[in-house]
Length: 211
Image (cartoon, rainbow, N blue to C red; front, top):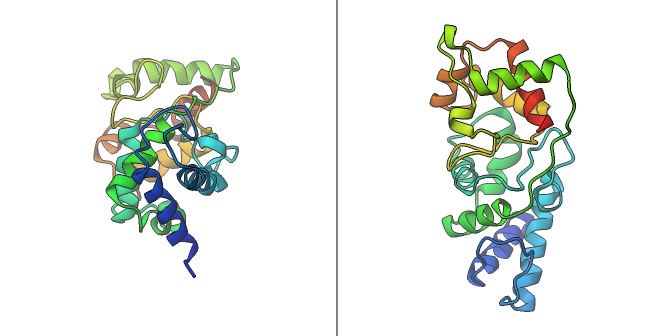
């Protein structure tokens, strides 16, 4: 009898074998019934934590819908080779990614990238306004560049730089802390945020969750 992770890996392999390419359809017409079933099971497995089609309802787990495919692929490979070693990565993703092939990772990244984005929560507050300013302008006097220069004017992400718009504020705040403390290796981001205060981080993530 296969273990749960082996079943996940097999399901993902069937998706790749079936020629699945990125697209909004959960099950393209050119798939066999078995391949469609395998895709549904794969998405359901990810959805246990990340929500249906990558729309997470838990602030512990990030939204994956509309995430940049290149970023998802890089992170899954980092989980697999254990180079991303922050505590949550070790607890949740090392085991899940351990049996994924590169082709499977690419297919999964393409799937989530093609899903409709999560809508931001909206809202208007001094904290959100401060975060918007930091995101768009940075802190020039302290050599902190605007977040938008890498993550896009609307936080939509660019290539290997992730989409941040609509992401859970608690998740983003935690990631900023682990990067700042070098628990998560991200040299570019560490250099950018090393001098941000916690209050500034809270403002930025409040803005990002709102858009």
